[in-house]
Image (cartoon, rainbow, N blue to C red; front, side, top):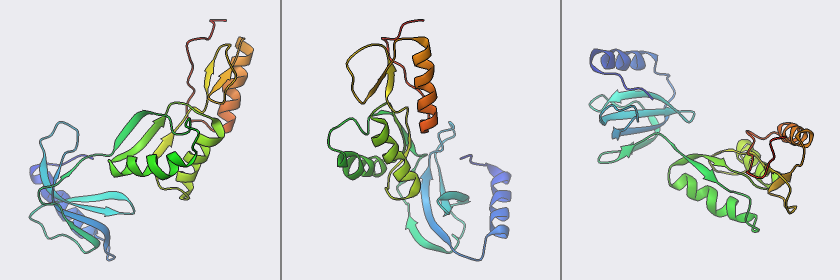
Amino acid sequence: MTLVRGSALLAAILFAVVRQPSNPADLVITHVTVIDATGSPPAVHSVVVRNGVIDALFAATATAPAARTLIDGTGKFLIPGLWDMHAHLAVRPEPALAEQVMLPLFLANGIVGVRDMGGPLERVLAIRDGIRSGRLTGPRVLTPGPFIDGPGDAEPTFRRVQTAAEARTAVSDLATAGVDFVKVQANLSPS
């Protein structure tokens, strides 16, 4: 989100008013202190949300557009969504833990994205795809599925390989399964 200053802010407000659709916004938060994470100082604005996306920022002194939900943000702060960059959603034996506890806690704490760092492929893809389809409520999930590692005990959180050909096959299989990235561990040999 980029905040505009001075006359550009006035132009943005006028443009937003002119292009304002006749249907009400989903959400308007008035008089909220916006921290945009660009290094700009915090500033008080009214924020308009349509279809889950910030549609416009208004000067806090401007009249807020009609909205299905109106929140007075006086004394409150609005920041960009947070990401947890190292989580393991599917390694615990209780499958409901992620769905019923972890996902709601992430959202309740402003975490809108999670980089799952490895787990049983079927379980973590089910969580990720359940969120994408709307069956589950949770943050966006990116996952590698199981770790690719060298020889060791068989377990669902690891894909064990011993040769370069096995490693290529493992990466290809994971890509075909739909992982977002690949995570390798330290027991791989250079060849």
